[in-house]
Image (tube, rainbow, N blue to C red; front, side, top):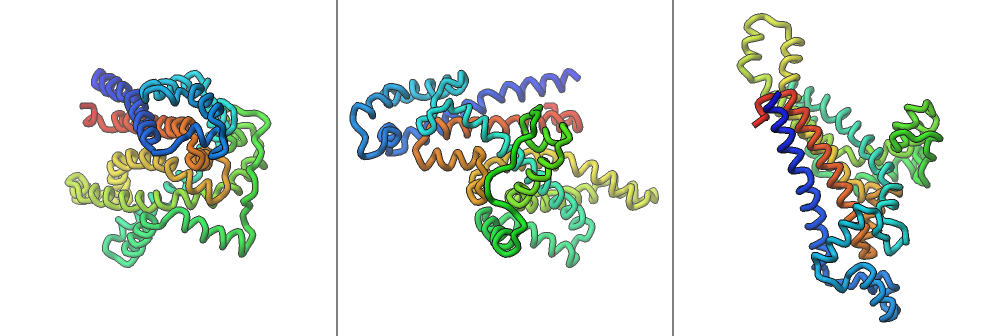
Length: 333
């Protein structure tokens, strides 16, 4: 138990430096870009020098880079940083869009598990057969297919040809909000009509976003399961005459330990693909907000979105590490 506590303390101590490092890297990239954000925020080429000077003073753009970075980070922490495009606090704008992106990631993660894990297990059980070949080919396609290309192809099929999906707007929120994630709140409050509306709006973009991850998980599950099946304890179980189903169950338990880690990384990675998916399907989430911020040199919004993405990613990895340490004591180094 003491080793587990030390392990958790070490992991938590790396949490904050990681977030600071991510925001600092994004800020430096934005800082070295040869552009004038103050002029862009003031109205472009027609902006007056007085307006530009006022914006520079307001956002500390006339100060050294470290002063600008501290202004951004402290403003995000206190929610006093104003978005130059919307004139709202940046974190308020992000907070309104985060539930949409998060539930899109949840739907995508559902498809990652639903498709990737069973196909990986089936591929391992049917090793070197035509079934294994087809699944491995599918996994290769999943890893290689661009999200935007697959999105537009499926929009053409399901929207243009058959009118099975809706791309306009976004469903309403439940009347009572508990977690502030619409689908989860709709289930908790029993508003199943709203839950169906959100599923109907997000199932196709969720599939597109999760398709690549499903290919990755299928390949990883196959390799991990095959490695477990070739272990000495599996040979011992077979020699004892243990039924195949029980043998596979024991192998799968051990194979799932590293798979949990990959699933955690995949969930964080789904947020990274959200900007393209949300833009293609017209979902007003954080990803689309980030794309618009980049187009308008809205660096405060870019840093804020990056911070939230990094926070979710690092939190997911922390939870996975904790589960990993609980399941396998050998990682408590």
